[in-house]
Amino acid sequence: MSFPKNLFPFAHIPKETVEHFSSKPWCIPYFENDSLYPFPSESRILKEHTGDTFTAITLQSPDTIPFVQLFYSPPTSSRPSGEVKVLLSFGSHINGHIDTAHGGFIGALLDDMIGCAAETVRAKEKVTMTAYLNITYKKPIKTPGIVLGRSWVEKKEEKNIFGKATIEDCEGVVLATGEALFIVLDRDRLRGKL
Image 1: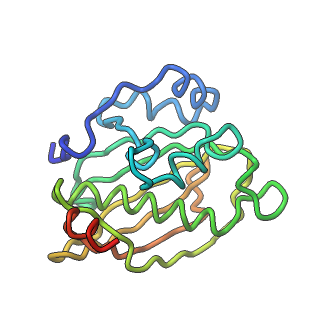
Image 2: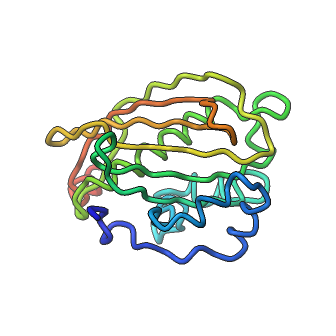
Image 3: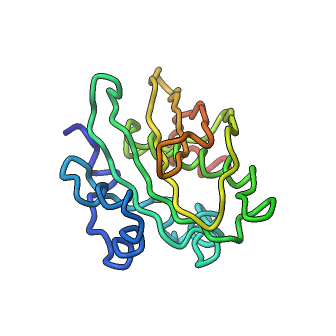
């Protein structure tokens, strides 16, 4: 397995997370699949600084995204860097239209998902930042509800990481897609510039 454990240690899944997602039969196989490795969402962990507050505080509530579980799927011929899969449970406080997730929220989610995939191929002492994100909205994303996100790195060229992501419903219908360029930066130099 080429997954960088030093970036994302594999984790025990909280019982309440398993119970929540297991209420939907289509989610159960993700928890039973031994080829998937659970890991925590780094951006949902509260830090001692102000980084990641949008996802760690604002989007981590019973009414926004109460439950999240990420899995790493090892490399295959079609995904040489592996794939990050994430189950997301949405509340109703992310809406734009009635019972429909806001498009800006979906953009932020795709950005976070692709960023997570980019983290799997960058050096630990480095950080990544979004240079661009292109979004295609295919169908409305209903709330409350559970979706599956997939993200992966398409290619890495020196300090450039190109990634893609999809958000899918329980039947695998793609609801939104994103493609992004992340720039790899030196962590200490970045802190000095901000």
